[in-house]
Image 1: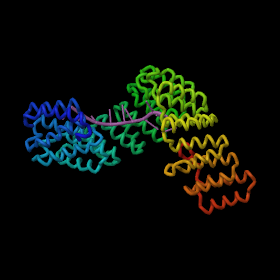
Image 2: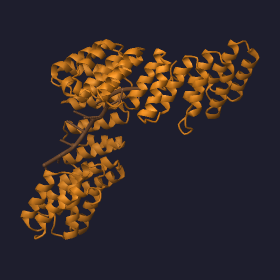
Image 3: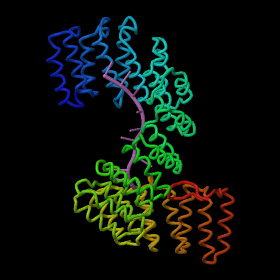
Image 4: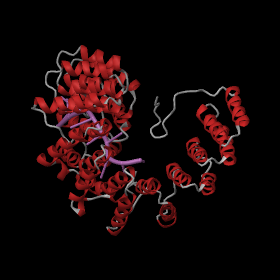
Length: 495
DNA sequence: TTAAATGAAT
């Protein structure tokens, strides 16, 4: 541990050394110093320091029986349970359990709340079941906070029946309890059930609304997400937070409702979200662009003070111009961005390449690709390759496109990029390359009828009907499925 | 001394 963060470790060692070295753990004053140190710096590092100090000085049966001692114990557990690796909480608990005469001496409801939180963060429901058992044994199973953590742990880990069982048997619940259950149900796709509990909740707060809206957005039920959002806004009493706005905007642009986009924009101006949270502003740019209103997207972008604009702001607006085929504007912005000495990343470059592809700016596109690799040292990913192949293919530069496709590292290459090239072969009626490309595709995947159809169409188009027929026979022989077309854009079926 | 929601851009 010392090697992980020598400076900090030295700092704490000194503190702990000064406070503790002359005394023993049984001194009340020193326990309180210890506690204040932990409360002032509630980090894993502090906890580990104090924990290891306890181990080396040795605590005995009488430890963790006074109020302060239990407080130290619980605070250590709390700090551990909030950490990314909360298994230390269990090590400590087991250690104390091992030297204590009875659980009643050293533990209370806080102890089990934190342990359950640790189970949740570890995603270890089996451990959670065990803690639940102990909770029943020590008689805390009807305690509001402990039960809420049980509901949270079970539903977070996907044990929804158990979560609902604890919930239904609770004598008393608060909004956190309700929200925990609704969150868990939503997380595991049980939207109807989540909604059922939501509708029975008497004091819904902004978290309740946000969680459910987020659930519907993730479940691609955009209309329902928007309906909920509008309902929340209209009944009053609950104000959306930045999280709510960030959650609802994807529903807005997927639904394509520009008027809601404008309302949220106006609301953000009025309440100060737009000015205070760059993520909200960036998301708004993206939403306007995806609603087809590049004018507003650009306006929002321009109104951000230069020093608040970050890479995501620039990338969002560049990608917006790209998707609207406004290549010139996209490239100008990229230049402006470079002047602001912001360093483009692979997403920025993908947007720029997209702009070139849609705008037919082949020379520029090739230049940006080179710039990305040579100057920025960003290795291209499969989307960059796909974009280049698409761009060259549209322009009829099939040889160049094929060369790029062959250059793709084998562990990265997929059937999608070859299909892009096959599409270009079809468009430009290049039979020879089309056959070559289909062979490539069939090596990776032979089940998709669309590939055969495309080549067969190329052959028909140039009058080679016999060969076209052969391809269709081959397709039947290999039992290629005539499944509904899969969109290359989002992978979802489109009929 | 406790608890619940976080998708900014491909």
